[in-house]
Image (cartoon, rainbow, N blue to C red; front, side):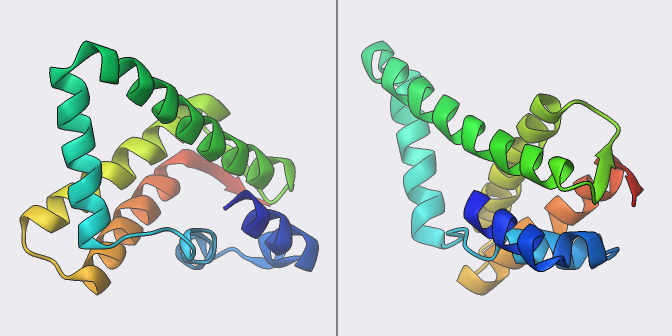
Length: 136
């Protein structure tokens, strides 16, 4: 995702885009939002909750994912296109939490792969609209 943000920044798309929904779609275009991935993520999380040794490895993987999302948010902010109402780590944590939660909720509601991605995108757009202080 960071490479995608860098590509968008280099092309000027971040600066030219006042449409947050389009920006979220462009950045998240490479994310894996399919039912099997959601099920696997949930099973792994449950296993980590039950097994302290596995939990340590899971926590390390979660921290790496958080660092990746934080780097993407930082790249968007550093592009100068947007300012945030919260600090970058808080925004990254909120985005990751909403993304995961919206995927699980959509899967529980029986969404197919196409609708999983749409549900996650809609939830992220709503959150980004709350997080962005100004579009420059």
